[in-house]
Length: 230
Image 1 (cartoon, rainbow, N blue to C red):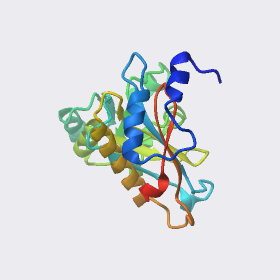
Image 2: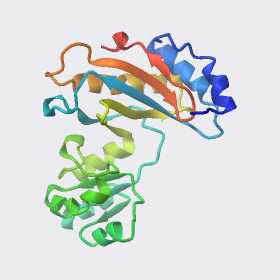
Image 3: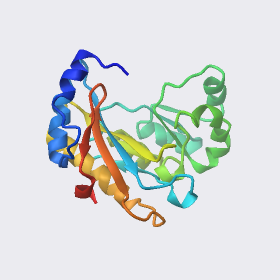
């Protein structure tokens, strides 16, 4: 993969062999974000899990203290009083069966997170083929299948992020924007790492956090010393 001039220039500032302390990594990543837009800072965590085993899966959610810097559009599947509650709590879209053809046939996907009350999961299940591959399917583990729609919406709007293993046993999570202060990014990072350490499956033996890399959208990655994060 060929990188542009800015990337190559930024990469010179990173010692590829070094493992940085979290605070150093945050400061460096902010300097590496040189694009013309406010880049997202992402964390990529390679774990010692083997996702092929059900008892080594990781999936959950955590509210970052300073949010993600992104405006999140929430769609809630609910009926009656729960639909009214969702509207009052600030959901961007609320509906039931009538939304199925709009999403299935018209390709409407103007939302970032889907929340559903448990009684609506039969309806939402019909959208599995569309929402599943996009990671939008509501799930009890991430708090998006719930009767407490007010709390679910408040958490998501406050900066709740989901984490889960991908097929290569890596977790990818945004922790904010390049415009955040170092303190805000460091707080969000430590909150995320704390949640993932807590979610460590008991079946995983040996080193849990194999490697942790922090990177801006368009820039090179900075390796964080995983020993400092245990």
